[in-house]
Image (cartoon, rainbow, N blue to C red; front, side):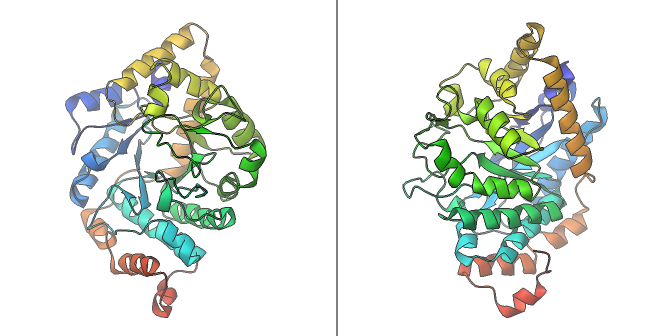
Amino acid sequence: MRKLIGQQMMIGVSGLTLTAEEKKFIVQNNIAGVTLFGRNVKEPHQVRELCKELQSLRHQMPDRAPLFIAIDMEGGRVARLKAPFTVWPPLKKLGDLDSPAASFHLAYYMGLELKSVGINLDFAPCVDVYTNPKNTVIGDRSISTDFEVVAKHASALVRGYLESEVIPCAKHFPGHGNTLIDSHLDLPVEEISLEELKAREIIPFIKSVKSRVPMIMTAHILYKNIDPDWPATLSEFFIQKLLRDELKFKGLVVTDDLGMKAMSAHYGVGQIPVRALKAGANLLLYCNEFDTPPQAMDSIEKALQDNTLSKDLVADNSQKILELKKKMIPHPDPLTEEEMTQIIGSALHSQLSQAIAAGEIPPGLKQQLISKA
């Protein structure tokens, strides 16, 4: 059962290379994947070597399944990979330009660079509607204040990532664009009604689902007029009823980082993962607290032994994750050094980035863009 539990866990690692303890923990516990942060990134060769080392661990694991290697690369201020990787503008620039073709190619070219070093999952796009101008947490990470514009470009971004063979993850369900409190620091509480949510925040998620987004990340937000008991990450209403039953989402539900204060300041370390799984989450994200994943796994194991958590649910989750990996990570290993060097920071990628930032695509660049959008 431990290996099934591990296949529902994504963790962080401490540095530019793996420690012996990290390798041992990943292999022995059959961990689903790793999320990379600034502390794990120096330059392309180092990132490629780290991803290569991570993927080599799969050969020692029971299912031989590739690991998810994830990163937050939205563009703008949320970008873990710096130059010589292409530096992309914030998503607001896409909304201002309002060219779905540009949005498609931003995601496609960004995805090619990620894939070249071995990253197969991007926690992007951010499809939150920017409805509160005082919301500095989202700000220019949002495509627009207009939900229809966000929805249109969300679709283009999802399709671009998929074309590059990188898994996109729409976030933060059911919408983080109206909050004032940073969920890294505390639990935001929203007063919006379900009707208002469906008429605005949910629309880009509907469009993302129709565009076959394979993964959606939940928000650590309490919508007190909709589910007064649980924030969305821990809410059966939001995950099961709204996302699964009404929006017909068939992919994987991943939590935002369960170590954030929105969770850890209000719920117990052992309570959080069990409740998230009961609510319908498939993947549990632990990014920065290196001692928490073992505690979370112990809590899940105890809940299974006590029959307070269904063994079938955990087994089904594990199978669903393995099926998605098989389908969407056909080539787990990084490209060759030569191929990687040709892709990262290429002239075409830089031209598109600069054009989006400037708010205009020159005619010559338009002709170079492959008309797939």
